[in-house]
Image (tube, rainbow, N blue to C red):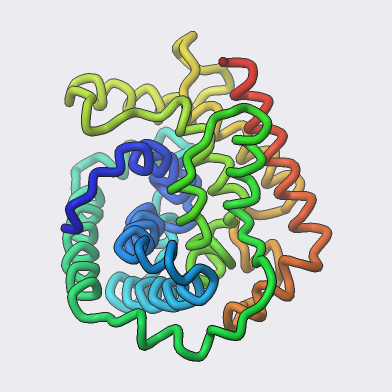
Length: 289
């Protein structure tokens, strides 16, 4: 739609499937669409910086609200009604096929909506009131991704630039924590599939092995798998944070960009969680390179 192939971005975002390693948080259609919206406006992000980030974040908030109004919820666990960490849940998702079909229907609807947004929205008109923003903002996913790159050398500057979309749980919606999303995406930069250059059979095999590993304490294959690695980090994160969703971790609903920045810049809890997942993801990556 926008004439760009960003295969590394696709590889990193594969771990967002099923609500962050299939844990049921923000639907991958929502988080993927948020990254897509940011990519559509990447030229403005490079030109206008903070003001454009705030404008795009507002667009993403609108997208999340549209998705919720259209499909009932932006959370995978609520929309699909299954728990991918149980055998029964996985079987119900795939059989008899109605829930898989619903996901494809929602993907189709989301793409149609995003195409209309790209054609009609004018971000230049949206950021007029945001030019007075001063100082360097903190983006939780970006902090984690940069930390991983600094410690391991594994990173992607485009992904870091666009990762502000996870602020406040994807467009300030209270969904998947940005720090956790950053760690999972960082791992997938090393372990994830390059989906454009992977055969269908290999992609299907990796998909099946990944979902089986969600059910097991030890992975079925000796080769490192992003699902099993991501699951371990998610479990450690949940143990310390008490949840995976921003609204439950912070006990807040952020009203706007400034409200979120005031919180993230002063929260010891959020700082600790960012450090936790940066360290965990970096340790895994360093053990594999």
